[in-house]
Length: 46
Image 1 (cartoon, rainbow, N blue to C red):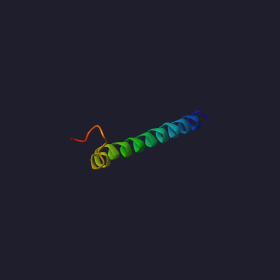
Image 2 (image 1 turned 120 degrees about the vertical axis):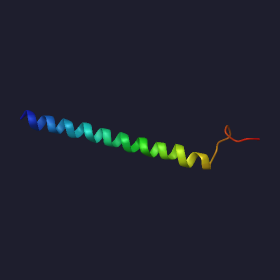
Image 3 (image 1 turned 135 degrees about the vertical axis):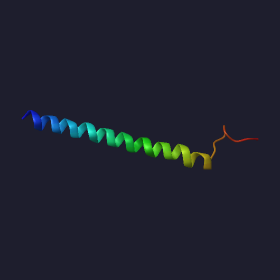
Image 4 (image 1 turned 180 degrees about the vertical axis):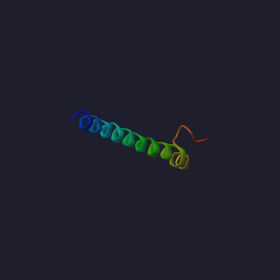
């Protein structure tokens, strides 16, 4: 019984970690690759 509950919570934790890792990778990609292509008003040189 305890093993089943432990495995369920382990799965929940790993799922959350996986989702957060995916979001972090996408955000890092956008920051590193996409934003330099389209600079905003603050980063433009006059």
